Image (spheres, rainbow, N blue to C red):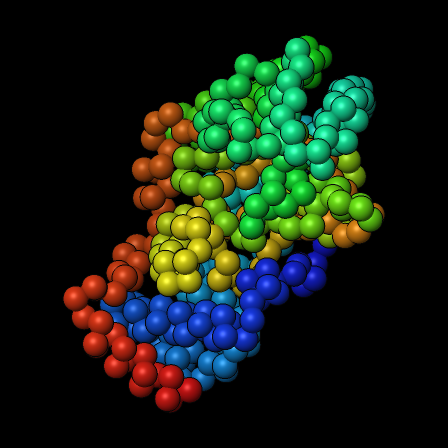
Length: 386
Protein backbone atom coordinates (compact mmCIF):
# COMPACT_ATOMS: atom_id res chain seq x y z
CA UNK A 1 0.00 0.00 0.00
CA UNK A 2 1.33 3.43 -0.85
CA UNK A 3 0.73 6.63 1.05
CA UNK A 4 0.66 9.90 -0.84
CA UNK A 5 2.27 13.03 0.53
CA UNK A 6 -0.24 15.24 2.32
CA UNK A 7 1.37 18.43 1.02
CA UNK A 8 -1.17 18.88 -1.77
CA UNK A 9 -4.24 18.60 0.50
CA UNK A 10 -6.12 21.81 -0.13
CA UNK A 11 -6.26 24.15 2.85
CA UNK A 12 -10.02 24.45 3.12
CA UNK A 13 -9.74 26.81 6.07
CA UNK A 14 -8.36 29.54 3.85
CA UNK A 15 -9.40 28.75 0.28
CA UNK A 16 -12.89 30.26 0.56
CA UNK A 17 -12.13 33.07 3.03
CA UNK A 18 -11.53 36.69 2.13
CA UNK A 19 -8.70 38.71 3.65
CA UNK A 20 -10.82 40.10 6.49
CA UNK A 21 -12.06 36.64 7.51
CA UNK A 22 -8.53 35.24 7.47
CA UNK A 23 -7.35 38.06 9.71
CA UNK A 24 -10.27 37.38 12.07
CA UNK A 25 -9.20 33.72 12.22
CA UNK A 26 -5.60 34.70 12.91
CA UNK A 27 -6.80 36.93 15.76
CA UNK A 28 -8.93 34.06 17.12
CA UNK A 29 -5.83 31.84 17.11
CA UNK A 30 -3.90 34.48 19.03
CA UNK A 31 -6.70 34.64 21.60
CA UNK A 32 -6.46 30.87 22.01
CA UNK A 33 -2.73 31.04 22.64
CA UNK A 34 -3.21 33.85 25.16
CA UNK A 35 -5.56 31.48 26.97
CA UNK A 36 -2.81 28.84 27.07
CA UNK A 37 -0.25 31.34 28.41
CA UNK A 38 -2.65 32.45 31.13
CA UNK A 39 -4.04 29.14 32.32
CA UNK A 40 -1.67 26.23 31.71
CA UNK A 41 0.94 25.04 34.19
CA UNK A 42 3.07 23.35 31.52
CA UNK A 43 6.03 25.66 30.99
CA UNK A 44 6.89 24.29 27.56
CA UNK A 45 3.35 25.06 26.38
CA UNK A 46 3.52 28.56 27.83
CA UNK A 47 6.88 29.25 26.17
CA UNK A 48 5.75 27.98 22.77
CA UNK A 49 2.46 29.88 22.91
CA UNK A 50 4.35 33.06 23.87
CA UNK A 51 6.74 32.62 20.95
CA UNK A 52 3.77 32.39 18.61
CA UNK A 53 2.14 35.49 20.07
CA UNK A 54 5.23 37.63 19.68
CA UNK A 55 6.24 36.47 16.20
CA UNK A 56 3.12 35.32 14.31
CA UNK A 57 2.85 36.87 10.83
CA UNK A 58 -0.38 38.47 9.72
CA UNK A 59 -2.97 36.80 7.53
CA UNK A 60 -2.82 33.24 6.20
CA UNK A 61 0.77 32.67 7.30
CA UNK A 62 -0.26 33.41 10.87
CA UNK A 63 -3.08 30.83 10.69
CA UNK A 64 -0.78 28.17 9.22
CA UNK A 65 1.83 28.82 11.92
CA UNK A 66 -0.91 28.57 14.58
CA UNK A 67 -1.88 25.14 13.20
CA UNK A 68 1.71 23.93 13.39
CA UNK A 69 2.15 25.35 16.89
CA UNK A 70 -0.98 23.77 18.40
CA UNK A 71 -0.09 20.47 16.71
CA UNK A 72 3.35 20.66 18.36
CA UNK A 73 1.81 21.39 21.76
CA UNK A 74 -0.52 18.40 21.37
CA UNK A 75 2.38 16.11 20.46
CA UNK A 76 0.93 15.15 17.06
CA UNK A 77 3.73 13.36 15.18
CA UNK A 78 4.54 13.04 11.50
CA UNK A 79 3.85 9.32 11.61
CA UNK A 80 5.37 6.60 9.44
CA UNK A 81 2.61 4.44 7.87
CA UNK A 82 4.36 1.26 9.05
CA UNK A 83 3.09 2.09 12.54
CA UNK A 84 -0.49 1.26 11.58
CA UNK A 85 -0.36 -0.84 8.36
CA UNK A 86 -0.96 -4.61 8.35
CA UNK A 87 -1.03 -7.39 5.75
CA UNK A 88 -4.54 -8.65 5.15
CA UNK A 89 -3.41 -12.22 4.42
CA UNK A 90 -2.96 -12.84 8.15
CA UNK A 91 -3.43 -9.69 10.24
CA UNK A 92 -2.47 -9.73 13.91
CA UNK A 93 -5.65 -8.26 15.35
CA UNK A 94 -4.03 -7.59 18.72
CA UNK A 95 -1.52 -5.30 16.99
CA UNK A 96 -4.35 -3.72 15.01
CA UNK A 97 -5.99 -2.87 18.34
CA UNK A 98 -2.76 -1.32 19.64
CA UNK A 99 -2.47 0.88 16.52
CA UNK A 100 -6.07 2.00 17.02
CA UNK A 101 -5.40 2.76 20.67
CA UNK A 102 -2.21 4.71 20.04
CA UNK A 103 -2.90 6.39 16.70
CA UNK A 104 -6.66 6.18 16.12
CA UNK A 105 -6.01 4.43 12.79
CA UNK A 106 -5.24 1.00 11.35
CA UNK A 107 -5.00 -0.06 7.69
CA UNK A 108 -5.23 -3.69 6.51
CA UNK A 109 -4.10 -4.18 2.91
CA UNK A 110 -5.52 -6.85 0.57
CA UNK A 111 -8.30 -7.50 3.05
CA UNK A 112 -11.33 -8.38 0.93
CA UNK A 113 -10.84 -11.59 -1.13
CA UNK A 114 -11.12 -11.13 -4.92
CA UNK A 115 -14.39 -13.08 -5.23
CA UNK A 116 -16.07 -11.09 -2.45
CA UNK A 117 -14.71 -7.83 -3.87
CA UNK A 118 -16.03 -8.69 -7.33
CA UNK A 119 -19.49 -9.42 -5.93
CA UNK A 120 -19.54 -6.20 -3.91
CA UNK A 121 -18.42 -4.13 -6.89
CA UNK A 122 -21.04 -5.72 -9.18
CA UNK A 123 -23.95 -5.10 -6.80
CA UNK A 124 -22.94 -1.58 -5.79
CA UNK A 125 -22.35 -0.64 -9.44
CA UNK A 126 -25.83 -1.92 -10.26
CA UNK A 127 -27.19 0.23 -7.46
CA UNK A 128 -25.15 3.30 -8.43
CA UNK A 129 -26.44 3.06 -11.99
CA UNK A 130 -29.98 3.36 -10.60
CA UNK A 131 -29.23 6.21 -8.21
CA UNK A 132 -26.68 8.58 -9.74
CA UNK A 133 -28.99 9.81 -12.55
CA UNK A 134 -31.42 11.00 -9.84
CA UNK A 135 -28.95 13.31 -8.11
CA UNK A 136 -29.74 16.38 -10.18
CA UNK A 137 -33.50 15.73 -10.20
CA UNK A 138 -34.02 16.89 -6.59
CA UNK A 139 -36.99 14.56 -6.12
CA UNK A 140 -37.90 11.86 -3.61
CA UNK A 141 -38.24 8.37 -5.09
CA UNK A 142 -39.19 5.13 -3.31
CA UNK A 143 -38.87 1.58 -4.61
CA UNK A 144 -39.21 -1.88 -3.00
CA UNK A 145 -35.73 -1.91 -1.46
CA UNK A 146 -34.54 1.71 -1.55
CA UNK A 147 -35.52 5.34 -1.04
CA UNK A 148 -33.85 8.30 -2.74
CA UNK A 149 -34.06 11.49 -0.67
CA UNK A 150 -33.37 14.14 -3.27
CA UNK A 151 -35.65 16.83 -1.82
CA UNK A 152 -35.09 17.08 1.96
CA UNK A 153 -37.74 19.79 2.33
CA UNK A 154 -40.51 17.32 1.46
CA UNK A 155 -39.10 14.32 3.30
CA UNK A 156 -40.10 13.18 6.81
CA UNK A 157 -36.60 11.75 7.31
CA UNK A 158 -34.48 14.52 8.80
CA UNK A 159 -31.78 13.21 11.14
CA UNK A 160 -28.88 10.77 11.06
CA UNK A 161 -30.88 8.57 13.43
CA UNK A 162 -33.80 8.57 10.97
CA UNK A 163 -31.50 7.54 8.14
CA UNK A 164 -29.76 4.77 10.11
CA UNK A 165 -33.11 3.32 11.25
CA UNK A 166 -34.57 3.14 7.74
CA UNK A 167 -35.94 -0.35 6.88
CA UNK A 168 -34.81 0.23 3.28
CA UNK A 169 -31.59 1.50 1.78
CA UNK A 170 -31.87 5.27 2.15
CA UNK A 171 -29.91 7.47 -0.24
CA UNK A 172 -29.09 11.04 0.75
CA UNK A 173 -27.76 13.52 -1.79
CA UNK A 174 -25.57 15.86 0.19
CA UNK A 175 -25.86 19.50 -0.83
CA UNK A 176 -24.70 21.71 2.01
CA UNK A 177 -21.93 24.12 2.98
CA UNK A 178 -19.70 21.26 4.18
CA UNK A 179 -20.33 18.48 1.64
CA UNK A 180 -21.67 18.93 -1.87
CA UNK A 181 -22.03 16.28 -4.55
CA UNK A 182 -21.65 13.23 -2.28
CA UNK A 183 -24.09 10.32 -2.55
CA UNK A 184 -24.44 8.53 0.79
CA UNK A 185 -26.52 5.33 0.82
CA UNK A 186 -27.46 4.25 4.35
CA UNK A 187 -28.05 0.53 5.00
CA UNK A 188 -26.79 -0.53 1.59
CA UNK A 189 -26.96 -4.17 2.72
CA UNK A 190 -30.79 -3.89 2.66
CA UNK A 191 -30.70 -3.36 -1.09
CA UNK A 192 -29.61 -6.93 -1.84
CA UNK A 193 -29.25 -10.14 0.21
CA UNK A 194 -25.80 -10.86 -1.23
CA UNK A 195 -24.51 -7.54 0.16
CA UNK A 196 -25.98 -8.45 3.55
CA UNK A 197 -24.17 -11.80 3.48
CA UNK A 198 -20.90 -10.15 2.47
CA UNK A 199 -21.25 -7.64 5.30
CA UNK A 200 -21.84 -10.38 7.87
CA UNK A 201 -18.85 -12.41 6.67
CA UNK A 202 -16.19 -9.76 6.10
CA UNK A 203 -17.27 -6.39 7.46
CA UNK A 204 -19.02 -7.26 10.72
CA UNK A 205 -16.66 -10.08 11.64
CA UNK A 206 -15.95 -10.31 15.38
CA UNK A 207 -12.22 -9.60 15.01
CA UNK A 208 -12.94 -6.04 13.86
CA UNK A 209 -15.42 -5.30 16.62
CA UNK A 210 -13.09 -6.88 19.21
CA UNK A 211 -10.19 -4.73 18.00
CA UNK A 212 -12.25 -1.60 18.65
CA UNK A 213 -13.34 -2.97 22.04
CA UNK A 214 -9.75 -3.73 23.03
CA UNK A 215 -8.43 -0.39 21.76
CA UNK A 216 -10.93 1.78 23.59
CA UNK A 217 -11.97 -0.36 26.54
CA UNK A 218 -15.67 -0.35 25.76
CA UNK A 219 -18.37 -2.36 24.05
CA UNK A 220 -19.11 -1.32 20.47
CA UNK A 221 -22.16 -2.38 18.49
CA UNK A 222 -22.58 -2.30 14.71
CA UNK A 223 -24.96 0.27 13.30
CA UNK A 224 -25.50 1.21 9.66
CA UNK A 225 -23.48 0.02 6.64
CA UNK A 226 -23.23 2.79 4.03
CA UNK A 227 -22.06 3.14 0.44
CA UNK A 228 -20.24 6.39 -0.44
CA UNK A 229 -20.12 7.49 -4.06
CA UNK A 230 -17.73 10.37 -4.73
CA UNK A 231 -17.18 11.16 -8.40
CA UNK A 232 -15.89 14.44 -9.76
CA UNK A 233 -17.01 14.41 -13.36
CA UNK A 234 -16.81 17.22 -15.88
CA UNK A 235 -20.53 17.83 -15.35
CA UNK A 236 -21.66 17.66 -11.71
CA UNK A 237 -20.02 15.27 -9.27
CA UNK A 238 -18.32 15.91 -5.96
CA UNK A 239 -16.77 19.33 -5.62
CA UNK A 240 -16.81 20.00 -1.89
CA UNK A 241 -15.85 17.82 1.06
CA UNK A 242 -15.96 18.74 4.72
CA UNK A 243 -12.67 19.91 6.19
CA UNK A 244 -10.95 18.11 9.09
CA UNK A 245 -13.48 17.33 11.83
CA UNK A 246 -14.55 14.77 14.42
CA UNK A 247 -17.80 12.83 14.74
CA UNK A 248 -17.69 12.19 18.51
CA UNK A 249 -15.95 10.09 21.12
CA UNK A 250 -18.41 7.21 20.94
CA UNK A 251 -18.17 6.49 17.20
CA UNK A 252 -15.70 4.38 15.21
CA UNK A 253 -15.83 3.24 11.58
CA UNK A 254 -14.42 0.69 9.20
CA UNK A 255 -14.01 1.43 5.48
CA UNK A 256 -13.44 -0.86 2.52
CA UNK A 257 -12.42 0.62 -0.81
CA UNK A 258 -14.42 -0.78 -3.72
CA UNK A 259 -12.34 1.09 -6.26
CA UNK A 260 -8.60 1.71 -6.40
CA UNK A 261 -7.60 4.88 -4.58
CA UNK A 262 -3.85 5.04 -5.33
CA UNK A 263 -3.22 8.75 -4.86
CA UNK A 264 -4.82 12.03 -3.83
CA UNK A 265 -6.51 12.60 -7.19
CA UNK A 266 -9.03 9.90 -6.20
CA UNK A 267 -9.92 11.54 -2.87
CA UNK A 268 -8.69 9.08 -0.22
CA UNK A 269 -9.95 8.99 3.36
CA UNK A 270 -7.44 11.11 5.29
CA UNK A 271 -6.56 11.14 9.00
CA UNK A 272 -4.29 13.14 11.29
CA UNK A 273 -3.05 10.32 13.56
CA UNK A 274 -2.91 10.74 17.34
CA UNK A 275 -5.65 13.39 17.42
CA UNK A 276 -8.34 11.04 18.77
CA UNK A 277 -7.69 11.68 22.48
CA UNK A 278 -9.06 14.70 24.39
CA UNK A 279 -6.60 17.44 25.27
CA UNK A 280 -5.24 20.82 24.25
CA UNK A 281 -5.74 20.27 20.51
CA UNK A 282 -9.49 19.70 20.89
CA UNK A 283 -9.89 22.48 23.46
CA UNK A 284 -8.11 24.97 21.22
CA UNK A 285 -10.21 24.08 18.16
CA UNK A 286 -13.42 24.19 20.17
CA UNK A 287 -12.59 27.75 21.17
CA UNK A 288 -11.78 28.72 17.58
CA UNK A 289 -15.08 27.22 16.41
CA UNK A 290 -17.01 29.32 18.92
CA UNK A 291 -15.22 32.51 17.89
CA UNK A 292 -15.66 31.87 14.15
CA UNK A 293 -19.22 30.52 14.31
CA UNK A 294 -18.16 27.12 12.93
CA UNK A 295 -19.71 23.74 13.67
CA UNK A 296 -18.54 22.48 17.08
CA UNK A 297 -17.03 19.32 15.57
CA UNK A 298 -14.60 21.13 13.26
CA UNK A 299 -10.85 20.49 13.77
CA UNK A 300 -9.56 22.85 11.10
CA UNK A 301 -6.58 24.27 12.98
CA UNK A 302 -4.19 21.36 12.46
CA UNK A 303 -0.86 20.97 10.68
CA UNK A 304 -1.84 19.38 7.36
CA UNK A 305 1.69 18.16 6.75
CA UNK A 306 1.03 15.55 9.46
CA UNK A 307 -2.10 14.19 7.76
CA UNK A 308 -2.05 10.69 6.25
CA UNK A 309 -4.06 10.17 3.04
CA UNK A 310 -4.98 6.47 3.24
CA UNK A 311 -4.37 5.49 -0.36
CA UNK A 312 -4.80 1.88 -1.41
CA UNK A 313 -6.20 -0.62 -3.85
CA UNK A 314 -9.76 -1.93 -3.94
CA UNK A 315 -10.26 -4.33 -1.04
CA UNK A 316 -8.22 -2.28 1.45
CA UNK A 317 -9.71 -2.10 4.97
CA UNK A 318 -9.33 1.04 7.10
CA UNK A 319 -10.31 1.18 10.79
CA UNK A 320 -10.62 4.62 12.34
CA UNK A 321 -11.66 6.41 15.51
CA UNK A 322 -14.04 9.19 14.54
CA UNK A 323 -12.89 11.22 17.55
CA UNK A 324 -9.76 12.31 15.68
CA UNK A 325 -9.25 14.78 12.84
CA UNK A 326 -10.36 13.15 9.58
CA UNK A 327 -11.86 14.01 6.22
CA UNK A 328 -12.17 12.92 2.61
CA UNK A 329 -10.17 14.82 0.01
CA UNK A 330 -12.05 16.30 -2.94
CA UNK A 331 -11.60 14.21 -6.08
CA UNK A 332 -9.93 15.88 -9.02
CA UNK A 333 -11.90 16.20 -12.23
CA UNK A 334 -12.37 12.83 -13.91
CA UNK A 335 -11.52 10.80 -10.77
CA UNK A 336 -13.72 9.09 -8.18
CA UNK A 337 -13.94 6.84 -5.17
CA UNK A 338 -16.47 4.29 -3.96
CA UNK A 339 -16.35 2.59 -0.59
CA UNK A 340 -18.37 0.75 2.04
CA UNK A 341 -18.31 2.10 5.58
CA UNK A 342 -19.57 0.34 8.70
CA UNK A 343 -20.42 2.53 11.70
CA UNK A 344 -20.10 1.37 15.31
CA UNK A 345 -21.27 3.13 18.44
CA UNK A 346 -20.04 2.55 21.99
CA UNK A 347 -22.73 1.06 24.20
CA UNK A 348 -20.64 1.53 27.33
CA UNK A 349 -17.14 2.25 28.61
CA UNK A 350 -15.33 3.54 25.55
CA UNK A 351 -15.79 7.26 26.02
CA UNK A 352 -14.55 7.17 29.61
CA UNK A 353 -11.55 5.03 28.71
CA UNK A 354 -10.50 7.28 25.84
CA UNK A 355 -10.78 10.25 28.17
CA UNK A 356 -8.35 8.63 30.64
CA UNK A 357 -5.66 8.73 27.96
CA UNK A 358 -5.66 12.52 27.73
CA UNK A 359 -2.63 14.68 28.50
CA UNK A 360 -2.00 14.47 32.29
CA UNK A 361 -2.19 18.24 32.66
CA UNK A 362 -5.80 19.46 32.21
CA UNK A 363 -6.23 21.41 28.98
CA UNK A 364 -6.52 25.19 29.19
CA UNK A 365 -9.86 26.58 30.27
CA UNK A 366 -11.75 28.96 28.03
CA UNK A 367 -11.74 32.64 28.93
CA UNK A 368 -14.15 33.51 31.70
CA UNK A 369 -17.12 35.53 30.49
CA UNK A 370 -16.76 37.98 33.37
CA UNK A 371 -13.39 39.36 32.30
CA UNK A 372 -13.80 40.73 28.73
CA UNK A 373 -11.75 43.87 29.44
CA UNK A 374 -8.71 41.89 30.61
CA UNK A 375 -8.99 39.62 27.58
CA UNK A 376 -9.15 42.56 25.16
CA UNK A 377 -6.21 44.22 26.89
CA UNK A 378 -4.02 41.12 26.61
CA UNK A 379 -4.95 40.55 22.99
CA UNK A 380 -4.26 44.19 22.13
CA UNK A 381 -0.82 44.00 23.73
CA UNK A 382 0.17 40.88 21.82
CA UNK A 383 -1.19 42.22 18.53
CA UNK A 384 0.93 45.35 18.92
CA UNK A 385 3.98 43.26 19.80
CA UNK A 386 3.54 41.20 16.64
